[in-house]
Image (cartoon, rainbow, N blue to C red; front, top):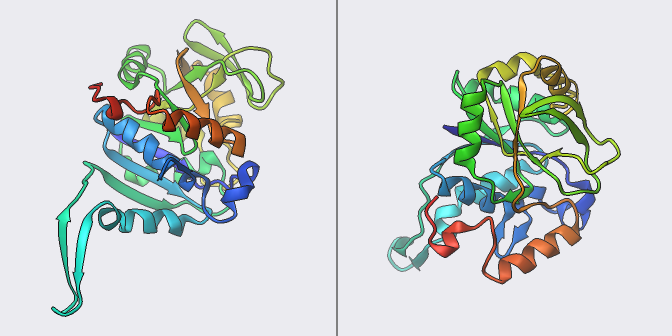
Length: 263
């Protein structure tokens, strides 16, 4: 199953670093948050990624082009025809497709623009700026059982996000960026069927979290998997500092591979 990661936004609220690199390439520890997200999906066996690039997308492409080299011990012998010897390497079981989906393209249009890489199959979708310990297997199981077109992961962080109106496991209303009232919000980590493309447009103004999800909610095609565990996005430098502090303690909830846990 493929996993689509939205990694093309400008990241204006963390502009201290995003003026130099795309937001998903801002690091936690010594690796981009994009790497942390991919490692998490990989721990569940999801290793086929499609990354929607936009702002400074060439930096993401260069990172993966040089990934093998950066993660290996090598010797460069310039006296022997510039021979390079790899002594040890850290390989990932990943297949990564990087797609330029436009500089100013909104989320719905980015997803629509990678449709040709997804075929008719169910796929995962998440944002390139948030980590969680959501159980992806349970998320997928509920999605399949529900018959919904899209199932999103709902969380309750409080604060600065839009809210969802619910009836059981069905989303009946989607009020993105409304005043927070303690309700459930879209935490990303979504599962989607091919039918989602009926609601999306290649027009760069298509915001997935607005009219498309509002229509899906109206059509009872939008489900929610409620997650009450760890979830944190990286909107600001303060968010990054908090994630960095958790990571440096060696017990990051989104990093089961550090603890040798099998998902």
